[in-house]
Length: 282
Image 1 (tube, rainbow, N blue to C red):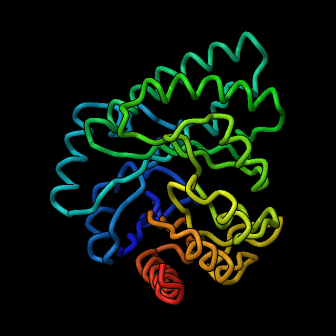
Image 2: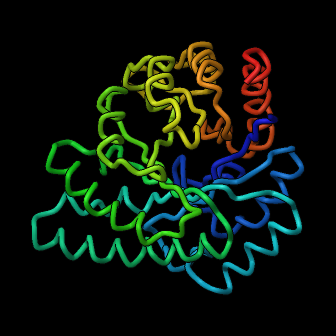
Image 3: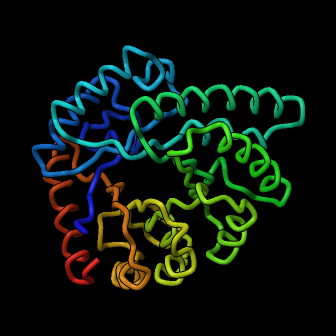
């Protein structure tokens, strides 16, 4: 199959001090046109805590605008990254506050799942890293209990992919506990290289659990850097993906580069990934 290469939302918009990842409220529709110009296949949507009620996924009008720009450009949306959870991980709070946040999260994620159903978006990603990292068995149990209720609520066409900082063995064991075909993994090559994990070992361990891949490079115990300049061993990654016969897409989530040169930067990233896809006959 021809593997799709997509882009994380916001990467085609100058950050203007907003950091490496954000929802580009002023430019999100134009990003679809730019993605088409560059030859990208998809944009991964972001739903974040900041001004979330202004996100087009939140309203009927916004959903209609998404349908219009998608029809105009042919650019797909196959996944939503629920970055909201990184700011509102209920299991990081004391018991009383935890219940309140958990109830709020439940209502918000249900709204997003309904929007995804209307838009026929098949994957919701939940990041469990940094501020939302699962640091204890108690955290793991609380999140698992909550998510099983969410996945039962979600339309049967929607999968949920977790992104964690767990070791390959521990991550697989955690996913096994869910025992649910629609709960799997979002694999991030940069986060893994930053933690010192072996990319081949990870993808061959997680195998069919991997629903999506974020392409990124990081220095070990350091920051995100340009593809091929950090600790990510991309030959190891793509060797593993070839072995497991990976069949899903790739989302560029790499370092931004020089502000104002987003299109050139993304074009170079596309070429970087395409060469590995071809080399390993993915």
